[in-house]
Length: 194
Image (cartoon, rainbow, N blue to C red; front, side, top):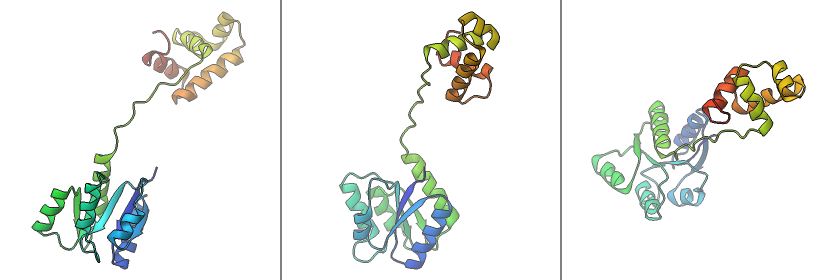
């Protein structure tokens, strides 16, 4: 899934170049030319903000202050030709995640952006084991014991084709290539007895 970035930059040439680089890197990009228009465009779908400090009207620092006062924790990266110590201290106090100085080193910009997005990503949900039917568990329990499809069909009183159908379904559910891998994975996940 592509991450969506809001780029707030009043210099059209820079904004277009940033957008081009980010799109090539697989991001979706929305642009705004001022803090108020950026604030108006900002939505829940945005994963990060790239913002110039020196904007007409309300500065990038003012926008950052507004967002943090509203409780927004969206990653915020300042693009600036004014990366002086005072601006950096002020931005850090306001909760800025990082800086990229102008002229922009686009390789650095991508590294910074990927870093702040990684830090802000919610913890991955623990994958739930697939749900197997009673028949699938029964068939895989016999596979785990080393029985062939012919043997399993005879033991369970079903057709060999039906056995293979259940084995194939379990292999797809577990995303494995062989019946042996399916059986081992099922035992490891506690889906069948070991």
